[in-house]
Amino acid sequence: MVNTLAWGELTNEFTAKGVTLIAVSKTRPVSDIKELYSLGQRDFGENYVQELTEKHTQLQSDIRWHFIGHLQSNKVKYIAPFIHLIHTVDGFKLLTEINKQAFNAGRTIDVLLQFYIAAEETKFGLDEKEIIVLLDHYEAQKQELKNVRICGLMGMATNTENKQQVHAEFSRLYNFFVFLKDTSFFGKPYFSKCSMGMSADYPIALEEGSTMVRIGSLLFGERK
Ligand SMILES: *Cc1c(COP(=O)(O)O)cnc(C)c1O
Image (tube, rainbow, N blue to C red):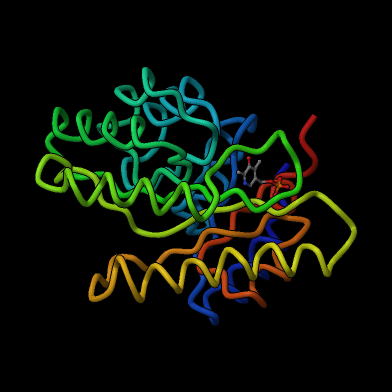
């Protein structure tokens, strides 16, 4: 079941603000994706490689597929030919593998670095120092890494009722994004994406400067 009313409201709000709405369709049937597609939705997010590749073959080729789950290096090759944006790069090895598979597929793949902002041990990602170190490695090997393009940061806040904490976490992410934009990525207009916010916390993410919001349950109902 798709909540088309919620989709319309979110689309109006996000369009007015210049924010991208990613419909997170993990675990949802292809029929649900088709329903949103028929309304005009083109950006969809998935967490699992096999589920994504199956859906990709069954659906229209102008869908922009976003990978938002934890990505293992040995699975990059399956999504490299078509993925629009990988939000979850959390290490240099993964970055080099994406570059290699993008080269094999004859394309450049856009990625975001996953920034660890939550006070929860279950979430993947890098902190400020680790991102700086990764960018140093990237800078040193830039000539060999021409098929991958770092376009911004992604993060997930702690799953908590404490709004102040969520504000602080998104603010930390956004401020670091702006810092990188003004330093390592100065003069690189493609470094423009700050992916933050889900169904429960997207209003706070928007207040803190999000440019891409990933919404699942508000559009498709609660996951089982
Ligand atoms: C599942 C998921 C979402 C969507 O979560 P909802 O609470 O259903 O909106 C967003 N981002 C990531 C990384 C996810 O894994």
